Image 1 (cartoon, rainbow, N blue to C red):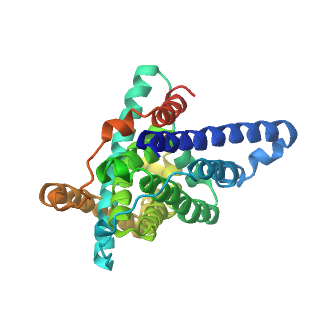
Image 2: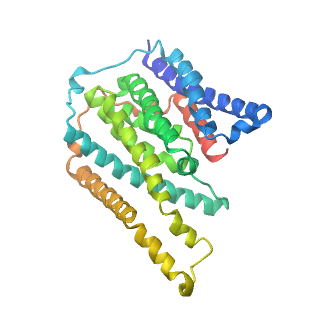
Image 3: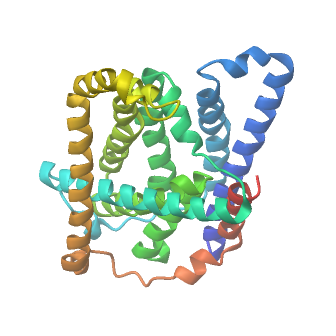
Amino acid sequence: MPRFLRLSRTGFAYFALLAVLLVCQFGASLLCSFLWPALTEHPLYVWVLSFLPLYGIAMPVCLLILRRNPCVHDPESEQMQMTAGGWLLALLITFGLMFVGSIMGSLLNALLDALTGKVTTNPVSDLVMDGNPWITVLCTVILAPLGEEFLFRRLLIDRTRHLGDKTAVLLSALMFGAFHLNLHQFFYAFLVGLVFGYLYLRTGKLRWSVALHAALNLVGSVLMPLLLRRFQPLLDLYSDGMPDPATQTQEVLGTMLSLLPELALLLAYYAFVLGSIITVIVLAITCRKRLHFSATPEQPRAAFLDAGVLCFFLLCAVMIFFI
């Protein structure tokens, strides 16, 4: 099969994945709004609307289109043995990249809000802060890492490695970031996607990127929201402005003292994040030449100018900026 045809089929497979997902979600939400409006208030509604069309309909369509595309493996470059220390170092790196990407996304959203005069919120943040933590664990720590790593690492990288390892990892990370359909998540999803892709490329095993993905989501979507909820009593004291020092000083001090363990955990988390950012900077300077890729000639232009890939990114852009 010609290489350009193989890539086009891959690009259009992911375009179909997103298009079918959006159509199914829109149709299901419209149907529920008219026939069963009470369902839209159920805690599971958004999660079911997110995952059932993706894994039940859109992913099978994508697999059907990709079934004729051959997978490419390079046994010589898939020989890295993952150790506990290596995985923990990768976890530290991904935390730093996630935090840097989150800052980039927040700054860009703030700039766009200032230019357009409208306020955008992070829908995922609102969902995990207010949702049932057990449902969040099931969806973000189990289902999302398994499905997304299978889609954007195994399926995508295996079918684009003929364009070069670096090109395959970069394309995988960009499509993974764009698939989130909001700027709040795009940058950090792209940056951590580079690490996920490289680990999969070098080990040939999907479990290591799945474990990293699950760990990040566990901390960001489950543990941190639970910790931040503990500060709600203190926030309630300031909900109507600064408390009256003459009457509420004792209450504020008592609340702050009761939250000292949570405050210590929060400070420890941000110290860990700061250390991870420093680690990323140091490793980027000292170890970037140690990254190992196969000798396959890189063809980034072929990847990013392909019609199917461009259609996928165009649909993502329309959803991000105009919907």
